[in-house]
Image 1 (cartoon, rainbow, N blue to C red):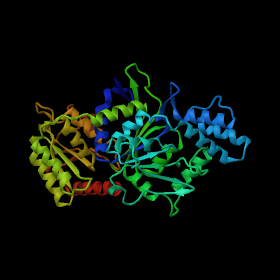
Image 2 (tube, rainbow, N blue to C red):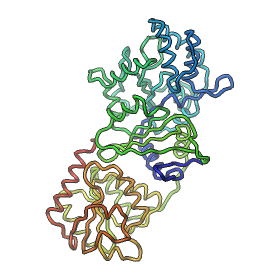
Image 3 (cartoon, helix red, strand yellow):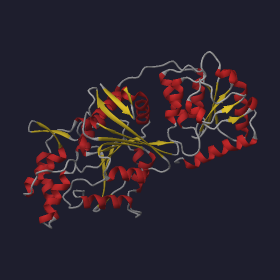
Image 4 (tube, helix red, strand yellow):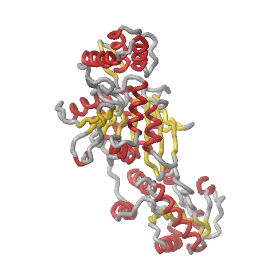
Length: 467
């Protein structure tokens, strides 16, 4: 069994995190970015990471020392040692082709096969120059036939994604740091190569891979098997995300309490007007769990008619993200309806939701997604609702609201409204609500200043959100 540790809290499998991630995958809005720490291979009866193995074989081929190679940078170090005594960089690339040809019979690593079986992934980005992710896709989806589209951006071959990629029914692989070929410097082998490839990716030239960069900006990125302190994380965070950022640390550990696998996990997720950045370790276990959850059937839960109407309003009416969610207890329906009507007249998109709904797990997930797309959550509070036998705010819904809006593009998100003399210290309310700035709207009759403030928040949210 694995657990997720978040801050000082340990949550078994972090169901909320997984539910949100699986939905993003099913919506085809996630791009996996594959790094070298996923590439475990069986070689001469031993399980090895591919790139340290390549580095050792290359060192032997070039007659340089392979002792004390730094972890994660083995190939860079062998290249550096060779170039200290030689100016012939072509020998380095020729040697790599010889070594890769000797190793081409190795089986495709299982983590890549599992990623290839997740058919909601349409585009795979890789930071490695080998052909393994392409082989995995061809093996799993095309019975070994070469049908996967392959692109690379290198000083010698500046490719980009085709404009019609989304209409093509074939997966694609993009090599960020080049792809193995006979041409020297067509893929990155040294740190200087890395710097040059990154410069090309960031350039404003006409031949920059702008279609690729645009797709990365519009997608959620799942970086697997790379290192957080390298150029890759900085590149994705700086050049594919804007607005405010929320960062969280998640460590995938075994039931015995230690890390279960080499390799890092980084999820860059669009959130409101900015990005949520989730970091974790243990990429191999992460892929196992992702694969299991994608392929496991889900239980069917009876739909609530009232909640169905809320979800249909958002999904089928064409309403933009950034609506205002007015939340109320049944006792305050009339006051809440007055607030809704005043906002409607001002042109504010409003979702009108009753907090007394009895939600199943499936609907909690959907409702979190609805709330997560809102600019403001406006709970209507009253003394009568706070003293009801059944508490007005269900703890599980409160957690969903706060989880959905951990990142706020600007200003508050939880915007409580008091329709009588209810105080902020009532003990049935979550602390986060009491800490928010309350607005007084007696009997649900909002002032023009209140309406103007909500209009301003909605406009600010939408102007900060990605198109």
